[in-house]
Length: 312
Image (tube, rainbow, N blue to C red):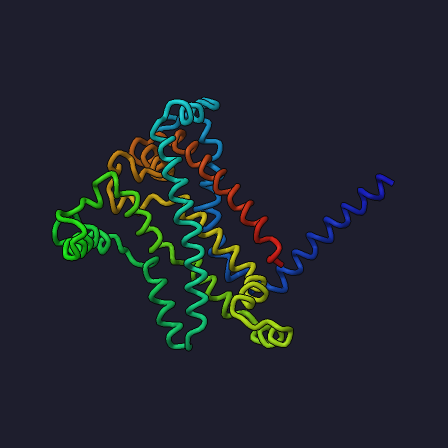
């Protein structure tokens, strides 16, 4: 009996490989089109990530050969590195505020734009996607400039809320809040476009059938038609928001400087940048990235479990 099961499994594997090869031959044009991207993605993303995993257990300064140090990098991170512990708190605050808020904001904006006429849809889609394409740090530095001419200071002084300029980008009380605001604005990117595409792909006949079944309000349409029909797009947008909120660091570096005042906007990604590209302690930086990778992986698993019922 065991032999039969083994033979069945072997045949199944052979059939699976054969079906895969046949499918590739049938759709060779599609596979040929995605091949260049996949090659670059594997070479420049997958391979470096895989290489960083064992590097986290070494002492490597890019000059001498890596030296295996076991769990030393991880024990140092959690027991001796106070800045890393602070960066965990900052990253959690950052992720909790920017991830869910940005995700809901993307969904609501995509929903509202979907109700507009085609010309306005194109215009507003470009307006809300543009921040993710352009370098907006200069604009935000003008808005939060610490002198009297800064737009935020000028506006608040004219209204009488403050009497002297606030140093938004250097005062430790404000740097994290300013960074979160800018990150929220920038995060309206790929996730927003995916949700817009999801709304466009919903079959209009489903609304007609739902009306016959008794669905009358927009809220009922959202719960019973829109969300169940947009499982892949919701999943993609959630993954993008998780990645952008956990790996945020560029915004703080460009806006409030590196390091920020009292490390108030110092995220885990910024800490990895510090040790990787400033001190060239690549083993230590890889250990930081490994912890960040595990946190993101667990969050993705949680989101996949929540949205799994809407997936194919």
